[in-house]
Image (tube, rainbow over the protein chains, first blue to last red):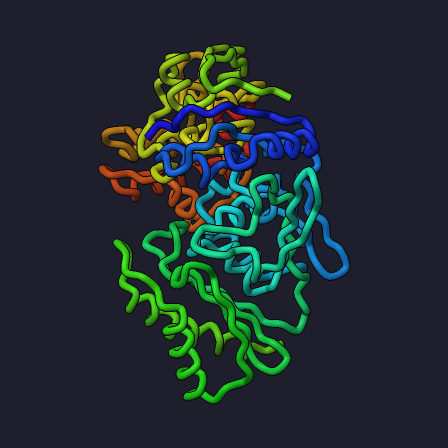
Length: 275
Length: 176
């Protein structure tokens, strides 16, 4: 449980960090809070030559509300976003999910963008990004580009981030005041990785629902207002479409059943809630 | 920019429980191993070494964090508090430590240092925390022998006393 040797770089500016990334490419890894990466290093699932520590870079510490989205810098911790006074008004889903992201102790170093970059299929922040159709801002020495949530996670724990790119911010849309939001997850212990996590919000004519923990990446789907029976059929189709795998925590069959049952509860909750 | 070579050992200077300390470590050395082996501060325990069990929890600039997910080189210039810093200079136990003893909140004691560090931050920042909030904070720790009832009872007693005294928590040291 000790990491393989690596060199440690502490750039003072974002430009210095991007220069290092340009130089080392795939041999470097960006270190922010380290709450997923350090565990992977300790287990030698990752063996980079250089760690580039960006946790304290002043350019990456801001949470800013623009007209239709909130932008969260790559140095912002999960605890800092939870404590942001405007969060509940800006995006209620984030207020709902953040207490489930890791534990009190890991949220104080773990970052929002780091969780997205790590892209564990059962973690809550990628699920929220998929449901809300947020964006991730990537930067390299060459250019800056913005990637939509649906294009960001390309496969199991794999993202669209290039070897010389880093996540500098993510964006979540500001919630429409008429939308209702719902979230629930099943875990072995509060704060553990979800066996299945479901998030949903009402839409103009129905519901948008997303599931994590089943497929390799979180998946979202839109439905019009459905009859009771059609909702059950739609959830069943969605569960089979997600598939899922057996592992030490749960079988694929149990996961699909959770999608049907929790999915139904949350869908009805957001559709029926008074605006 | 600091660039610390993988194969060399580097001098790291920081504040440990209010005192300036220094030691040498290669970049890959975990903060837990550095505290224990380079500095002899063995109160911080190394358990799972991947952030799950909570035994290694320390306070870094006041925040309760996993020392096994930190590297020694990241402590440079920081303010670190470990379980050794909770008791007073006269070695009198803190209010929380006293309550742990009273309520049999520890048996083998392996998880205890980490739990004390988490609760010390919670007490400082959220003295109004209720049982649910205390249990939520404790969910980041695993105790395999005592069970959690004694730990929760001890914490509740200290939070209650802290509230009654209007924020003065007796021997609890909060400034390092």
